Amino acid sequence: MGSEAMHEELDARAAGVAERVVAWRHHLHRYPELSNREVNTARLVADHLSALGLDEVRTGIAGHGVVGVLRGGAAGERVVALRADTDALPVRDLCGADFASEVVDADYPGGPFPVSHACGHDCHTAMLLGAATVLSEVRDRLPGTVLFVFQPAEEGPPVTEEGGARAMVEAGAFAGPVPTMVFGMHVTPYPKGYVGYRIGNQYGASVLVRIVVTGRQTHGSTPWQGVDPMPAAGAILTGIGQLYRQVSAFDPVTVSIGHVEDVGRFNIVGETVTLWGTIRTAVESDMAEVRRRLTTLVEHSAAAYGATAAAEYLQPVPPVHNSGSWVAAGLPTFRRVAGEGRVVETGGTLGYDDVSEFVRRFGGLYVTLGVQDAALDALGRPVPVEGGRGLVTNHNPGFYADDSVLVTGVRLHAHVAYDHLRGALVTREETPDAGGTLPVRRPTSGRP
Image (cartoon, rainbow, N blue to C red; front, side, top):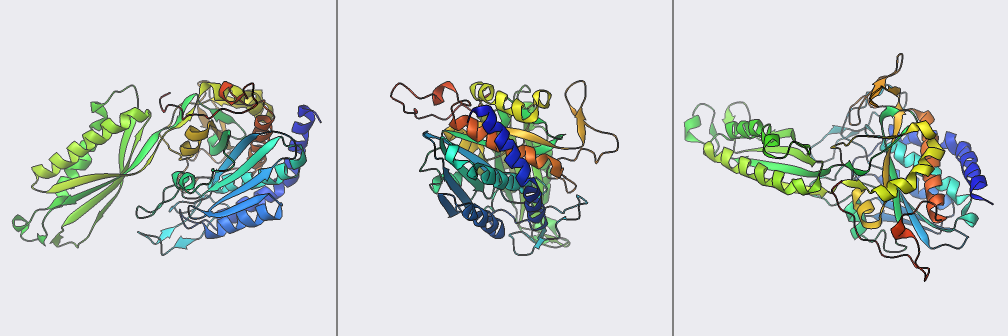
């Protein structure tokens, strides 16, 4: 069978599994689980992969990670890893669907929290389950191996726990066989069915920040007898707003404090105030400078009020980097699946995704898939269409995804996997040498 006929068969089989993909997505959306708590999600995934008769189904990787191994029946040594993230967010579900989540996790650290798939990981998991189904049905004609990687804790585990992509690597998820390419996608508020790509950093570098300001506790009626950490915390919050002026304006950075925590009551000057936030940089090499300047700001601002403060930097995530050679290799596949006019270059973003841990080690691509009622304006920016549900960003309680796009995601996974295994979606580094062996790839740079 030629490649064109195979692509047509993959599309037909994707259409055949489309209703099941939607049903999986609805179930996962109704019953979301937070990072490092993806017990039932992992069980659903593992049960289906086992039912497909894959060569291996590995469970319990870095918590609740699952990897399915499908070895093709045709000769070939390439290994493509298809990745989906499985965890949800501590966000209310206001998407308005009849399958909206009503889950509350009362035991999660810092909770109780309402839980929802406000970032679209339910879509990612369902689409990859569909792709596993499709590819397993043509396994005898696959010239290589497919890894179906279902990764927990992409949103970041509790700070006292390990988890996520780096933990999967360290747990040996890719020790054998080793991928020659990693591919994944993220649903986004873009026109339905549009594939977005970027040469360079698709997503930025990230680190979680914990700032603890320490004073001396006293009664609220006698503040001079203690040291109030609140003014120092306020000065730090104000100063953070000026950090952007201390680094190059040509490469965006953000420092955002999302949570302020203290222990006390209205008439007590407390001992500590803790600020939780995140740093994002468009260029990875800027992260060290922003951290240095934030540490200086924190320590000196606290000292000015007679308090002390320390900044910790946790859960660092490198940028998702798409090299030009990988993008060039992938564009023909994307255009075949989505349509010539529906594959567009997008701008940068300071969002993060720890799939970067996989892509920088093994090479590959990470793209976006539009799932909302939108069109592109004359400048290529997404705008809401009249009569639609509007544009709602990821992590917003109202985030939604149109079910009709899920089959496009299944097709993308299946076509990318087949094209890579047959040698059509490769870069120069992935082309076998005269001895027929694939060279070892080194991580790519984090700078666009």
